[in-house]
Amino acid sequence: MDLCHVPATREKGWYLALMAPNIKGPNYAWLDPSRLYCHPQGLQDCVADLLQPFQGDPIDMVAGIDAMGFILGAAAAAVLQKGFLAIRKAGHLCVRTVSQPYTDYSGREKVMEVRTDAISPGLRILLVDQWVETGGTMRAAIQLVEQLGGVVAGVAAICIEGSEGGRWIREHYKCAHCVPPSLQPRFDRHQFGRE
Ligand SMILES: O=P(O)(O)OC[C@H]1O[C@H](OP(=O)(O)OP(=O)(O)O)[C@H](O)[C@@H]1O
Ligand SMILES: Nc1ncnc2[nH]cnc12
Image 1: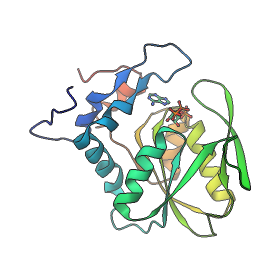
Image 2 (image 1 turned 120 degrees about the horizontal axis):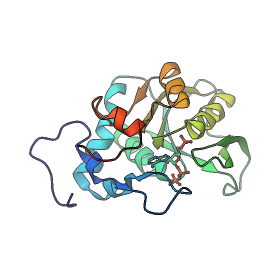
Image 3 (image 1 turned 90 degrees about the vertical axis):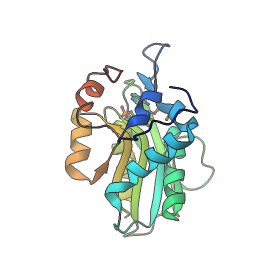
Image 4 (image 1 turned 135 degrees about the horizontal axis):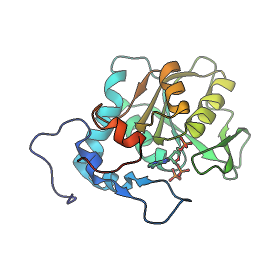
């Protein structure tokens, strides 16, 4: 889809067609949604869809997950007029941190960390990432927030796959995503394309 094209009717998830499949092999995610960030209306509608279920909910802060979750998370924070907390892959934060090991879709062991001085007990946090595949990354972020006494007010990602980890997150937290129900099975099978 052209980056200037805006469909006449903008149904939930119309902008998913802006994503591009992986051409670089198994060390990469199977789909790259970053192109939809380049589309002004696509980005705006995506963020609106991610925030829609949380309208009226008490949210004190938005936290985004390194790296592509920073973009959606910061955009959501700006809409909500809240602050934004970066949850980072280990090795970047030069301040006191707590860390959490995890394994993601690649099967590689990684470590996530967050500064210790931003989350006060009871602070209600909306966690935002680009994608939930195995759920390993999002679960690590949830553990970090809860370890610091924060409350996960919700989890938002373009797609929350129907993996065991994705289902666990949906069962335990209020969630938002951008995939219409009719397309979810295809995303769960990693079949790209709207037809
Ligand atoms: O549910 P999981 O299996 O844990 O996978 C989800 C994570 O993988 C992707 O990030 P990735 O580390 O590929 O990198 P990026 O955000 O830096 O592009 C995605 O943005 C999530 O953070
Ligand atoms: N951005 C992404 N797209 C598709 N699958 C993913 N798995 C993890 N990140 C992903």
